[in-house]
Image (tube, rainbow, N blue to C red; front, side):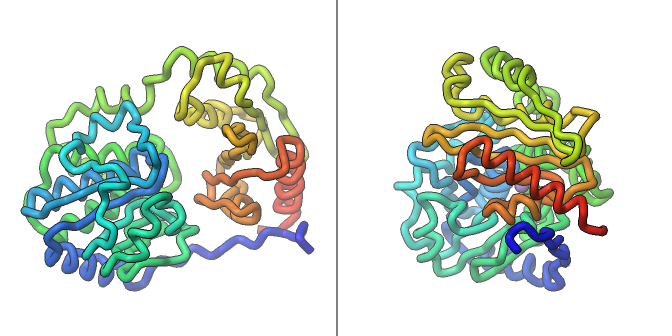
Length: 343
Ligand SMILES: [Mn+2]
């Protein structure tokens, strides 16, 4: 039975989204010192939606703190674009029991890492997210699985909060939107997304420099590592899959640090011959972190969920526990089963 077809989960729009946005805005307008957190190892949507909201709340006179639950916090090079030094604190400096806490782009409390207990103790917990896998938590849930990015939802929240959007807040949200839409390429990019982006772009931040720092700022080692991963790429036609991997020794050879493997999947997924691209990256504990991408025919979100992970329909991931070969075997079996399922 465990090898049976993976059911596709219906994506239901939140019927009370507008109401929840209103409730979130009201709670934030009441709050004196809102505490904002995003998921561990933040991407630009996580950090950008957090700091964008942070800048705006600060401009409304709030004492804002922002953090994420990695210890130590590694600050990616693009973080400087978001200008958040005034609010960013280590998890240890984050309020233990915030009056009002907001989580951004965080699909489950566990994704808060070291800040999970703080969320448990928060009096009001506002959850702003667009992950379909978010089962719902917090006291005010602003979940829109159809939104391109959490930043797009924050833009709508800021409209309700009132006040002028600052250039800094606009830059933060724009970083989130362009990253999570793959520069307006992915399925979730709607006319509404483009209108939000157009509105953000009326602010005079340097979007060209932002795009360079977000998408074209690879250290040489990351390109060497890409070369290794591409050299060993495998096509599995019966599963409509192309896959490759990188190991910890590869990272040493290429002198690549944390985050240096984040863009590899974006190149692997370009292969014409397969719908699904898979990259397995060995972590320091030996386990492989699996990234999955589909061009549209496969629900890799459902596949990742079946393996204890999560994500979106066309972009998802999980952590494999049984080693490289076992993981690939299970992915191939899962894809072959899914292909045999009508619809
Ligand atoms: Mn996101």
